Length: 214
Image (tube, rainbow, N blue to C red; front, side):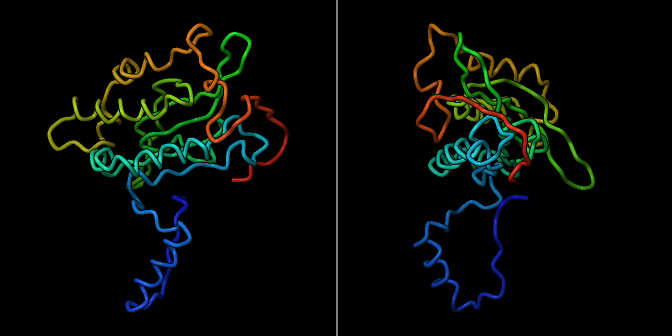
């Protein structure tokens, strides 16, 4: 469910050479099991049901967190999961921080956006669904992540984990923290706001009948 691989039966004397082979193929990114280990469904790249290109947001957040290990260290035990539509194949609804793809009409143009959910998770026989905190234009999701880390830093109880905090905190406080990021109006929108992440052409979702390819 975390989209990682476990390679078994690698002899100790072969580990270094095996790692170098993976690195040469760009398959040795560190951070498995941490906040930087972002997972997503295929999204509109291949799924007929998806609204947004969730893999695009996944790459943006993962690359950002690879450069910001301070943020990764600040939220141990947290995860990020992304789905391109409400069907939730990326399991965004049971993630510490979840993003669900959607669209927002800005004037007459559709723009990609994501619902931001916090506090979801699975563990010790209990499943918790994330609570909706904001609807953010796709290109502002990185800023939303920064805000959430700062919110935890400023308001956590002594010794409180990030996941426990986002389950406890009043969702109204989270909404207030992210509120200004939701704004996207015709007078302030830029051309890139109408292009989905990892795409080059204008955002034009075509949701069709079919099975999800997750």
